[in-house]
Length: 329
Image 1 (spheres, one colour):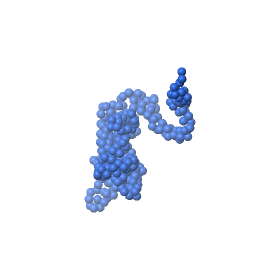
Image 2: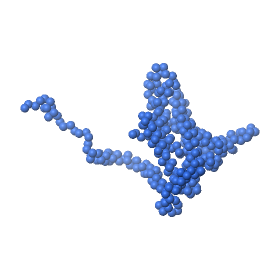
Image 3: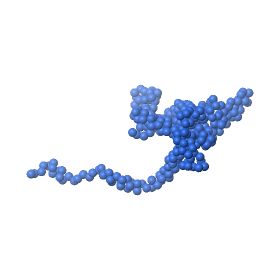
Image 4: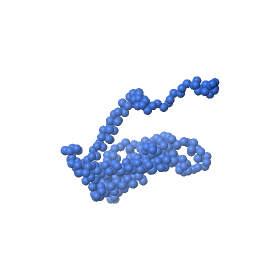
């Protein structure tokens, strides 16, 4: 029987190589790729060692939360006490409740007041027509981020303290001096203003990067359609920044129970524990200062678990609104 033209073409055609390699070849390919990239892997090893040594290995110390830890006999020789150390949480110890209340209040105030400020600053900088003016303003607003909290607190005390410049000027005018640094009633407003001054400029960098990625043709098209600057802001600029805003807000939630340990501990002696004690300083004061290592570790562990839960929940909500969040599904 004579073969058809189609059959002859199929017989003459060379066999097509399979593009999907067997699963047994994948590890071999990965090893070859690792051998080619050994220089990059060697450079990554010191960073991996630092992360393992200072971020993962210390997690083993959380076992202290279930022990009556005594430093002079070590972790493993200390007596097991079960969940007794967690009683400071579920029995409502007044010291813990005060620290929790202050932490939540400070977190709420700084989330509402401080978090939007970098967005506003980025929008204002982006609207400047002069690149020279923009660079000068950026340099001025970025500079405080590189100052340590010791310097920042000292500067504020020099200006707002009982013997500061403002108080000295008021006394020179025959008025009563003003002590803001030592006033417990305005402590939350004080530390919030310090965070605003120190970190707003630096936090605006990511928002400026997001603004630079927005297609300028969208602004041109909206202008042709008669959209005002406010309409362009609402319908073009803010939607273009939505992804980075949601991502940073999720990360903010993860650290919502961590409110500036160094900043607060430097000023705690001036206003007292009732006004300034937060969860981080509670862990320090109860653990290192008072020697209640088990209670301090239990509080720190629960704080970390709640932070992880907040990140996972916020990330799930971001997925529901179609955003990538911290990680993809």
